[in-house]
Image 1 (cartoon, rainbow, N blue to C red):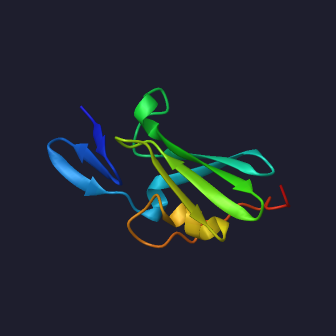
Image 2 (image 1 turned 90 degrees about the vertical axis):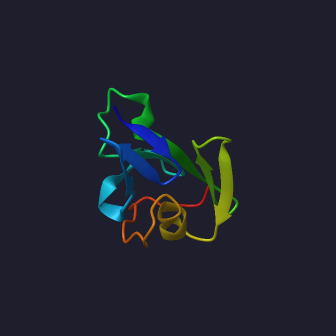
Amino acid sequence: METREGNFLMISGRLEARASEDIQVQALSHCEWRVIDRRIARSNALSLVGFIAKDHGRYEVMEFIDPVGHAAFSNLDEAIGHFVNISSDSAASAQSEC
């Protein structure tokens, strides 16, 4: 059974850190993104780890941890990097003003 603790995933009794390759960022609109942990089956609600929304030039993060976490960043790469334990080099192509 898989469980999640912040940026870590418990797999077979072992706590594994989330790395950039474990994250998938899906654009929902030109200023909203869904963040998925690829290590967890999409049919499992735990695969959804958070959302990013661009508002007035800031990237606001909502992370599904206990309690729910909120943070704001100046660019999309920093916001994505919040979901991993190492810097993310992922970037979404749509970053127009919201």
